[in-house]
Length: 126
Image (cartoon, rainbow, N blue to C red):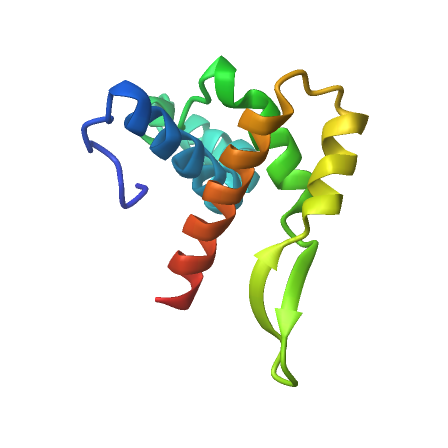
């Protein structure tokens, strides 16, 4: 079961930003195992339904563009020094992805992608 199962979802504008970050975490950690999880639960005797409702994080429609752009560009980073310390995400890469995916509100999308990137970077450094 995912570590955040059963947590109350945040509401309001701040909660919607958090929801995007939660979705990215889910997409990285759990989405690749969805089919396997369904098979495991289905093979039980008697068959059971997998706990998708407590595992899956739904993406708000207003975050779909940012999620798509983030997933496409998150490896396009700016590094510093000989150690290759990651300091930022590439704005030109984000702009290119927004053009390719025909994002309408580019400023909003850019802000969401950068917030998500910094949250994931911070999580990786902890």
